[in-house]
Amino acid sequence: MVRYYSIAVLLLLSFSHFVQAGGSVYSANGLGETLVAGGARAIGLGGGGLALADSHGANFSNPALIALVPGAQVRLGGHLAYWSTKSGGITDTDAETDWQTFYLAFPLTSAWKVGFGLLPVRRMDVRTFGWQELANQSYEERIRIYGGEAEAQFASGLALSPHFSAGLAIGYAFRRSERWTTVDFVSSDWQDAEFHFDDTWRGWAVTLGALYEVHPKLSLGLIFRSRQQGNWVTRFSYIHQDSVAESEESGEGPGEWGVGIAWKVAAGWVLVADGRSGLWKTGDLGPRDPRTPVSPLWLSAGVERLARGEAHGSPLQKWGYRAGIFYRQQHWPEQNGEKVVDLGGAVGLSIPAPAQRGAIHLAAEVGRRGSEKFGALETFTRFTLMVELNEQWFQRSKPRIPQ
Image (cartoon, rainbow, N blue to C red; front, side, top):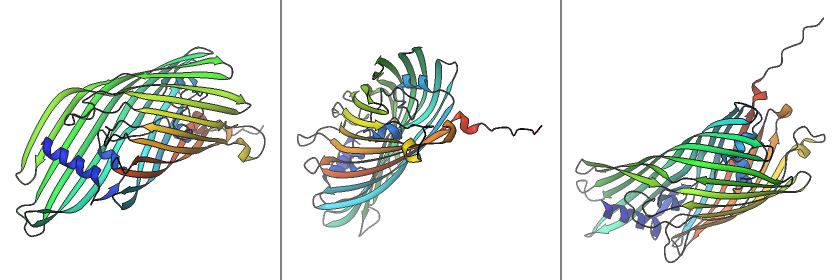
């Protein structure tokens, strides 16, 4: 079983004679592609915002920021991405769509707020096909890897003072990764075969967050996420022989820590800088992958002109604008002495609704990933849309009765 898995990974990363479709080719490696969390505002800043001390599209990766929500709030979002992959003289392009966030936050008291969310964490979607020769017989080999990880989260934020908030989030993660390998001979059917791997993970993790206003113009945000504790269930089926094997074992998943700063440099303008790293160990890539992952390191910096809501002037003057850059060293193991790194930039826009009823947040990021020496050079463009509805949206004004 391990032998077939190793062959599949090598085929997906070599690309010497295969064509790729779906999302990032690297998403077939390890646990998949880690998605940028925190919402469209965070994406427009390059992935930062852990210390932005306001409720306008706040980065809920830091649960302490939930304490800033003034009333009930609903978030819905999704993204559209375009990929161009180059390897071995072959270039392939494709597109993908996916949901980005669903979150509900509301106050219990003026200082204590809670939130419930369903958040995407990672995804994988790669399909390859190519022609091979075995004992002078030609056959087509098709490989598809598909799956992802989502987390159901309960979070709580408490404003302990006007300058300090603390938060706690409990997340239940569900991850599924399926890999199909189909061998289709041209001259006969009896030799055809299909192998199916199905890995499922369920685990718990706790995230602690803090927001501290060091100075009226300077804020500091911190997060620490424990390593996940849970179970793997692995199924393997060989369709040609109609055989199925299943195993279950306890395991762990990666944790994370992060720090962010926000500095108000002028009226309505703020600079942000964030750093995040993962707590990874050997075995975190899955029950059948003994390789040692790289410790991720995500760095971002951005600038934002804050949305002004009810400020006087034209609509364009009320909107929020932002831009950021990012460096993301991913968790995938080294190959040919290289690590997988993302480099790029992002822009974002927030359009407040009248009467503080909510906002529409837009973001776009452009970057490149990996290298041909590693196995493939990718360029990507992502567009993200997030709709934020405050409790005023659901309130109706009663008509006045004329006297």
